[in-house]
Image (cartoon, rainbow, N blue to C red; front, side):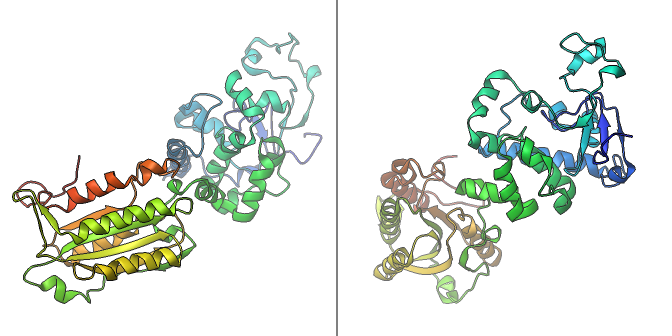
Length: 409
């Protein structure tokens, strides 16, 4: 029996670098702890499936730039996939209370029977203790990435091989049971532990999602159901404009996502005004080099961000150009990351009116989602040119060949 009953899994050494594990995958454990783990190989392969799901989530967050695995390469060994899943299994719960019998960083030299200082590995050299120990060495990693992380808490907070990767695995494997206790060693021994402790204490197993949301508007769902600050939303298409749609000369149907970022509303407003000017001129006919004003524009729009002043501005444009444009506001959202709701409206419309063509426009260029380069995000001449192109008669889908038209594909 170990001298300290707090320990529920004991091995030669306990690692927290890359993954939480006992190198060599040999250990002594309490059954009372093991029974809390997912079955290692049940009929559904649930453990392996959830491990893979956690890795997929990380790879997406890495792609977005929210998390990063900078300490070393991303591979199946470090992620605990395939055969390595079983080496990661015993320590797959955040509730593990590990202990070890070696204080030095044994590593592969254990195969030679000596530690890095040349000492033998006999029982007389055992030094039992609660793990993890040798924290700085135990965190591991390549030298240069490790040095870049040492004095940068923000990078530590986002480093997969520190707490974020482990929290992802614990939450994906065990849900709310994967939340470490408030006095857990993980908050003490991992860099940025206190920051993560506070976040997990507030949001539980949703802490990663909350961290993603607070990172940047591009890093979370474009749809309002995943936000808590939606002011108004309407997904159901109402056809009180049925007369307009049934007219012998049907309207040009446009779905418009309007965004007003808090740090540069002026450029966003200028883009909206330029697009209303395009819509009110009618469809450009390349054959005659004239504008066809016989068809009205039926405009469905949603607004993201902005105050009552910006909402009134759009309503004023609708009223000012009401002889050419029939407006229908379909939603207002406070969260500046909501920019996909208009597609709900567009999809509902096409289900109800399959014979129609629809046009989608937005007042910002989506390739510049950080809003840091405002000259490009709200480049008025470019936005106006694209709007003119997609609303022109030349950009008209047909059943025979093209079914979606844009400026470039």
